[in-house]
Length: 364
Ligand SMILES: Cc1cc2nc3c(=O)[nH]c(=O)nc-3n(C[C@H](O)[C@H](O)[C@H](O)COP(=O)(O)OP(=O)(O)OC[C@H]3O[C@@H](n4cnc5c(N)ncnc54)[C@H](O)[C@@H]3O)c2cc1C
Figure 1 (cartoon, rainbow, N blue to C red):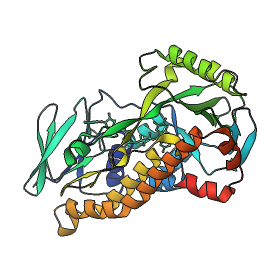
Figure 2: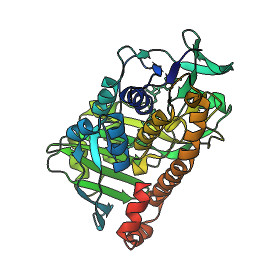
Figure 3: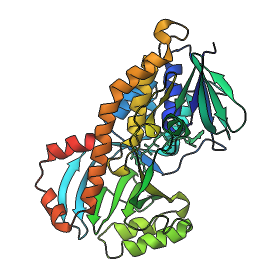
Figure 4: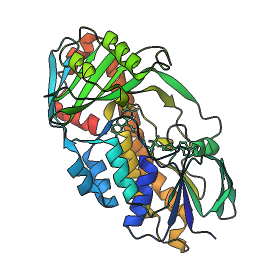
């Protein structure tokens, strides 16, 4: 039987799994298929919690990511009028997404990724799996679905998986407004957060309740103009942040909730990252959880061709270890979005919650 592992998706989860296996000297040979034409990433930057950095250490690129990233440092949570609700110094590292993706990619065996090839489904075949793709079918020992929120692998595992608009899009961008510190502003069912990436560079994200796709077809300058209107009269640094944003860095995505997957595995098939446990973005945890998934799964996969290296056993153990912790983060991320939606009085009352509770909830 083939000892090839097909990985659907060369995003954070798929790249991290292949890099982790190679770093561990595993005999599994990985073939990654990605529907995009080339390596890429949208969303400007990502914040990583210590457990994500620990996973990157196991993948072999923790030091390089720390060197390329920027500690977020102390920051404030404020109301829409600028009143400080809380000061927090969280152990977060912010890093450009493109840098993270390039570092993961550099850890792969040359030629591992085929771009422009979508996985469309799979069929179990003996002890292995036949992977259906947009070009030709592939036989493999195992298939890992790292194909994100819209995962075809998850939808083959559970046909009819439903998704629903969460009620708001999320915008992200990079700004060169100087002297910014970390801040999150809440009010009127919208939020805007800023995360420094260096002296004169910062990442920002924003959400605002509006109908699905309401501004979906606008160009990046249109999106910035829309945000400038939606956040008119908000306190400093909102106007400066938006004014000093290069439109080329702006992205917008409708936030969707997806039905819980009843199972993550089907014999030699498994899903991980957003394909397994998509979550709302408010805690900045999805990518970090994907890294933790990848490092753990690489450790469980064992030696191909041996009884201990049977992927089905490794995949079942992976689901046992990761389901509960990730479902806790999915719930916490949703709860964080409900807090943004809450009336101003609830925002003010949230200042009474002890910092250590908040830290625990944010860590997931
Ligand atoms: C606004 C926002 C802010 C966020 N901030 C943070 C943060 O600060 N920290 C954090 O940890 N997380 C954050 N996240 C979450 C994070 O971006 C995701 O959890 C992470 O990207 C998931 O990685 P993934 O590899 O599982 O999926 P993806 O990043 O979606 O990658 C999936 C890959 O699969 C490919 N693909 C899709 N379908 C197919 C197919 N059928 N066949 C082949 N290839 C396919 C795609 O092209 C893509 O390359 C944020 C998310 C949003 C929306």
